Image (cartoon, rainbow, N blue to C red):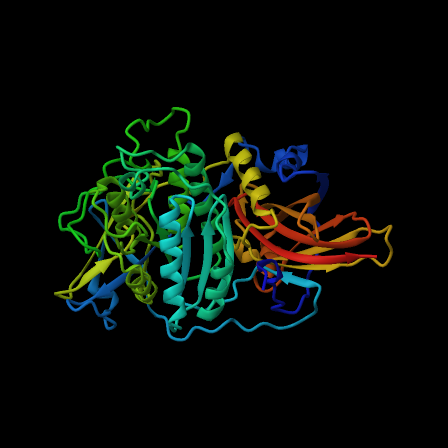
Length: 559
C-alpha cells in the first residue's frame, strides 16, 4: 500500500468551525512552500510576534530520560523504584518529577472512530505503544557492496518472520523515503524492501577506502550528502515527535558522517556492544572525520547538527548504528568512534566489525522494549546553548544503565530570528512535499469538502489539537497563538500544481482558553481552486510559537 494512502478517522469531527471573537484569519496563495513565511509579513502577524512585545514565557523545560536497565546477564531489571535512581546534571543532583516503567507487550494499532472518507488526520496510529522501532537503510553513505550487504541481511532477518513491535522502514538515498509506516507485519516490511531500488551513484574506491568512505585517508562525503543526511534525520525527528515513548532508530550504514555531540569523558566506561574496545569520538559535534571542520566557515553544519540532536532527543529517539561494512582490515577509528558516540549519548547500542548484521538488527529491535522513564526540571535555568551532561546511577548492584548522556540547553522561549523564520519556512515547505512522511509535532484532523460545481473551490477545515500548540501568555493576560495551515495539491502522477496558505492568530481570555483545553479544537480554514480532475493533497499546520509542524495526506476529485 503506498504511503500516501495512510489516513484514519479517529474521533467525531465536531468543533471544526468553532469561533471566538479574538480569532483572526488571513489567507494567501503561492506556487511554493515559502508562502507560509511570506504571509507572516502582514502587519497583523508582525504585531503578534514583535520582539518588542513583552511575552511571559516559561523559564523551565522538562527533560525526559529513558533508562534501559540490565543485570550482569543482559536481562532487563523490572522491579526498580524511583528511590533507586539518582540523576545528576553537570554533577549536580536533580529532583525527579516523574517516574514510570515501560514494557512493550503486544502493542496494538490505536482504534479509531470512523466518521467519513473525507476526514484525514496525522494522529499517531500506535500512540499507546511504549516502544517503536524505526529502521533506516542508508544507501547514500555506502558503496555498491555496502548497499547490497545491508539490504540482503535485512531481508534475511525479516524473512525469518520475527515477532516485532511496531516498526517503520525508511531508506536514505537521494533523499529520505518512507517505505512502510509502522506495522507489526514483518512480511509487509520484507515486500516493500524487495521493491526498493537505490538511485544513488556508486563511488569508485579501492576495497579499503570503500570499507570506510569517511576515513581520513579515504574520500570524505560531499557537502551535499552530509546535508542530505542531516535533513533526513531532522525529517525523522518531525515524523516521530508526536509518538509518545521511546523510539529505537536502527541506522544501517557503511559510514556515519554525523557526530551529534561533543566528546564526553566518563568516570567509568559506558556499556557498549560490538567487538573491540570503545574509541573516543575524535571530533566535536559536526561532520565526523573532517579535520578542516571549523565553526563559522562555509559548509559549517554545527547549528543544524545541534538542532537535529535536540529534536531527536526531545522525540525520545535512541540511535542504534549498525555497521554495514562488516569485518574490515582498516581500523576505521573515526567511524567507529562516531557510531559509539551516537549510541552511547542517545541511550542506544552500537554494532560493528561483525558480518552477522542480522544479530545487530535483531538485538537492536529487541533492545529498549523494557525501560524506565525519568523526568526532571533542571535546577540550572541559564539557557546558554551549551551541552549539559546527564549522569544516572542506581542503588542496585551489578546493574548497567543506558540512557542519553545530555542535551543542549537551548532557551525554550527564545524569540524567533529572521534566520529561524526562514528555516521554518523551508522546513514547512519540505514537509508539504508529496513524498515526505507525515509530521506529528502538531496533531490535527482535516475535513476536505469536495465542491459541487467546478467553479467552486475545495475547502479544507482543520481541527487542531490545542494541547499540541504552544500558547504564550503575554502581559495583556491573554493566551496568544499564531498558526499557519496549508493545502498543497499534486496531480495523480505526483506533479506539483499549487499551494494555498492561511494564517490564524488568536488572543484568548482565560475562560476561552480553559474551555478549549477541555475538549474543543483550534480551527483553521483554507480553500484552494483546482481545475476538474483528481488530486493528491498534503495538508499541513505549523505553530509559529513552538515552530512545530504537523502534516498528513488526502485526496479529492473535482467535478
